[in-house]
Amino acid sequence: MKVLAVMFIVGFAAAYAETCQEKKDRMLAEVKRGPNGMLPMGFHTPTCLKDGSYAPVQCMEAGCSCVSAEGVDLIPWRRVNGEMNCLCIRIKHETAGLMGAEHNCDPQTGNYLPRQCKGSMCYCVDPRGKQLGDAVPRQDSNMLDC
Image 1 (cartoon, rainbow, N blue to C red):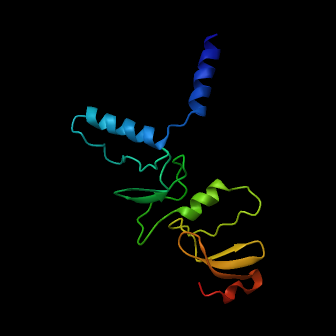
Image 2 (cartoon, rainbow, N blue to C red):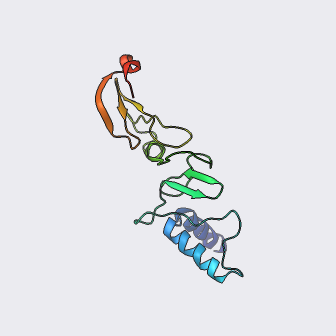
């Protein structure tokens, strides 16, 4: 009977993932209870979206990272120059394994690279992945001036 209870608790804990907002609220409560009212070195409160999930870009003093809606790091933490929106790497993560899902992402920022291809066609995109101009056959993609 004790084994079943332990298995249930472990199974429940594995099935339940703390949302970004829950983690943020918990961390802020811990800070208030702490001796100096500050987060320990190396900890940061996450940035959350209105639905309680993690914002695509998470930053702290050491740098920024792209994360999934569940808070899983999708690229290593790094100092980034310029705009980092992580939209490409997040969609690539969410659509992994789906047929036809192609996303050409910048490994440093998680942003869309200017040239994207889908099936036999390629086209230029803006930093948010919106197509700019007409698509050309993949074999002519080197003619795109993105």
